[in-house]
Length: 231
Image 1: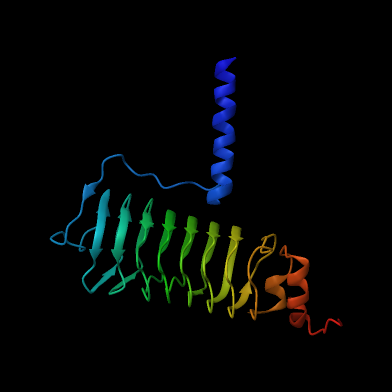
Image 2: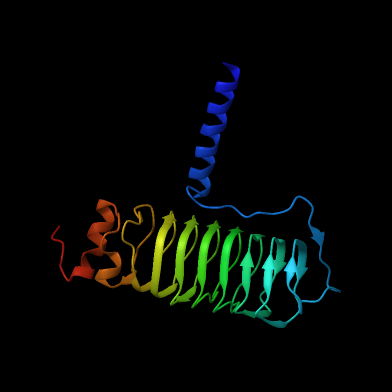
């Protein structure tokens, strides 16, 4: 039956898309087909709903307790802003700069970050649910006392990142650079980190317990157990 074959092709494509984009079981952003273009004349004093912002450097600003709902950001520079206690729902960030941005005590639900620069990004004391990071620079990321639910980090650079006291469920880490990272009280139970670079990572034993690693990584992580591997 042609219909059955078509359904099978759609199913196979969906499974492949989820594998490539780390979206198995993850809810994707819900964007309306026609977004309203945002300009510098618009104000950040109100909630932003169904807006599209393209190729813009945001003026220095301090935004607190706002809701960003169903928005698309492409080549937008937020690095001069301070955004705290804000709620991001169904937002997509592509080729954006959020370096050194303070975004603590907020929430991100059904959001995507693709090829974004987030150096020194502070997302402490926050909720991240159904969030995808792909090909992002997350060096010096600061994440403390946050809650991760169905979060995927794919081919991201997390060198010198600082993560502390996190709770997580369904966290995916694939082909990420964790060189010289400091991760403590970060439960990696049932998380497959076998494709990540763990060179010189500093981590407590409880954090690594229950994770999935490669044989090569097991040798390099032996120092966490206070043992020496004889060659």
